[in-house]
Amino acid sequence: MKIVILVKTLLNSDKLNITLQRLAHQLVENHLSFKDTVLIGIQPRGILLSDRIFQLVQTITGNKKIGYGRLDITFYRDDVQSRDIQVPTDTDIPFSIEGKSVVLIDDVLHTGRTIRSAMDALIDYGRPKRVELLVLIDRRFSRELPVQPDYTGHSVDTILTQKVKVYWSEKDGKDEVVLIDKV
Amino acid sequence: MLSVKHLLGIKELTVKDIEQIFKTADNFKQVLQRPIKKVPTLRDTTVANIFFENSTRTRLSFELAEKRLGADVVNFSASGSSVSKGETLIDTVNNILAMKVDMVVMRHAASGAPWFLANHIDASIVNAGDGTNEHPTQALLDAYSMREKLGSLKGKRITIIGDIMHSRVALSNIFCLNKLGGEVTVAGPPTLIPKHIESLGVRVEYNVKKALEWCDVANVLRIQLERQHKPLFSTLREYSIYYGVNRDMIDSLKKDIIIMHPGPINRGVELNSDVADSRQSIILDQVENGVAIRMAVIYLLSGKREVE
Image (cartoon, rainbow over the protein chains, first blue to last red):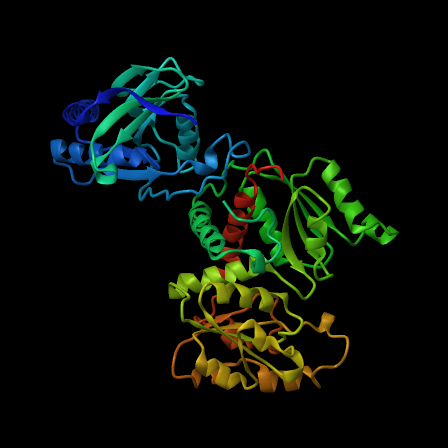
């Protein structure tokens, strides 16, 4: 039987909060009033991050009309036949992304395959002017595809067996990011 | 993930399976409303549509569903094939599978043919109608369309009218609606209602008007003349008068009921045009939902499975 061990805590509640604030400010710095910029979170776990970022950006800019959507990428995965069938979650993009700047938001960037799928899925909804990527945790040096984030909360060097777990108070009862390993 | 490897009949499905198919179909319905109505999920899968019996809707619907999942599709119909030279079912299907086909969608005139095939081949099979037995995807899309209009089917009353005896749609619908908590009545002439059908947990009513008064949804079935090898009612005109659903009958009810028909409609026989084309009819919604339901079924059956 494999035992899960805690390697280290990457972000505690306070640090997570500061990181989220910084990411939101960086977004505002680049997109000012968010006139032609929309935020899209990747289902299922990226949503919890994008919900927070969306709220913070709204507060900072005072703009209550920022486009915010959720994208499910289940049907765009490249490993449908080789793993258990995933039950999809909802895609909810209640606006056109044609000509918009899109900020894709996910919690952990690892191999880059999720983001590849997300970009394919996104393009099927229209042709955005540009696409940026915001991630909370960047697992460096583990990429299988040429994908890099534009906004990074925290970078971490990991090995393959390790896993980054992001906990959110809304769902998991606590705000915390930890690195675990199975031995 | 479904509890079954094949979709042979509704009988084998659990309520959880059905709910999962509906949930997935919701997502595919969303995909079908986009400008780009296609996803690349099954681009590594080839599906063969093997039809030993005629079909317009079901076959087109399956083919569209497969193509919109990104799968490769081959079509086969018995007419003009080596079946007329005497090739057996297993040989035919195995030859198709030898060309690296991953999934088979089959319609066959013999009841039970897909079960027989499932025992002899490895690929996943989707039953697109077998004789007078089951037509699972039709029942799923019917229930899905009802659910769209009525919410949960728990305690809802559904009348199935017409040729119950020869209808695989009726049997699959009964299984499906029972599992989802609906109450079912079958109505039609006594010659077209099988004996002992009450044992499936349905009510029997020989008066169509009464059956309509009772229900929330009326699913009107086609008179299957091609399967009736002996006369079971005198003339189509007489059938239409006593068992056909028409405007006057619908207007005389105290409530608005939903009208469904699996198609093809014999207009003026089991269903009059002024009902089939009315705002109460969801016949075209059924067709639309059919593609999403079939996408969901094929998607959910396509994953990796443990080798038994």
